[in-house]
Length: 255
Image 1: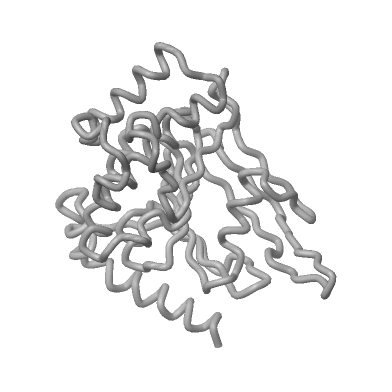
Image 2: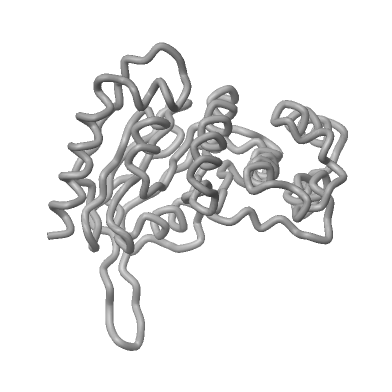
């Protein structure tokens, strides 16, 4: 299976007037097409910095990042979804979902049709003329995801996209959105501090150490479950074992 993302010996150091801060050290991993991978680690260890490097917002100090470019006619093979939805209040939900296409001068019959199909699929079609303030937090996250998917990226970077939601909504929305993403066969890299979320949603988990971060564990998640729901995942007999393993990993790196 072809690699969508390949990172080799990645290092990154911040340079300021006060000196240097080594953030990432010798990070290497690959993502295969359709993989859903979660990244966990202590706060401030460099997870979001990793995303900024993958998105080409920063340049590595050393090492390499290769992202497959397959979709012709699009400006980037990467879709980046942040913690906040950043929907524009003066635009309708429909216009917000078209914003990326509009900025990149890619509005056309086929791209608009794709967005309209996503609005229907994600249950937002009847709310398309509403303003963001008129929608729930979960619905706004769905709209933000459609805006991200509108450019048809191969790789989705999800930086704690559910962290602003209350606990019950977070469980429901994360499950729904991730099932919808899986239906598109997109490759996903998710940052989360929620161990249960990582185990429930991901096919594979990367555990980062304290700064300068390196990968201390990289493993596949295999859950015996009756269906694809979050509840079934959390009731799987392997769930508790994975949770304790990750809990111990994070406690060890904090010591």
